[in-house]
Length: 150
Image 1 (cartoon, rainbow, N blue to C red):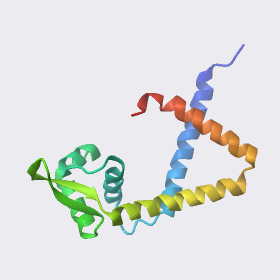
Image 2: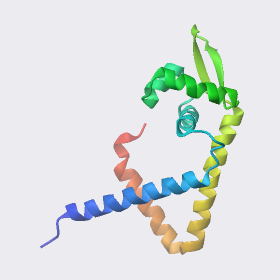
Image 3: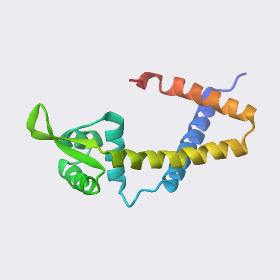
Image 4: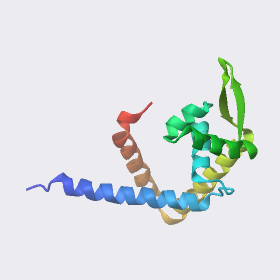
């Protein structure tokens, strides 16, 4: 009699969540946050991914109060990581965009993690294991996230 898939699926889910959490923590350890808070880096990442936005839109997207976003943006503007500009369609509003320095900051963080992961995979896995990992990741991506694609 075949075994029920639920225990296997539950075990795979636990292992995957644990692995993703450990990888996330490792990437954070490797990145130079330049003394920025998680809220500040989250806003930079959002601007990089979604483009310019108003402070209100950023607050809504991050699920925080507009006052919190205002304080966070003040630091990012002071550090030269974002720019404020008048909204071309409504001069009363501001639009926040990522500066070249902000993009460089995010690129540096991303490269540190990517470099470590590339080296580690190369040093610890055979070509056959790398092919298996790659195929598994493609399967997970197409299966788990197929209904969340833009």
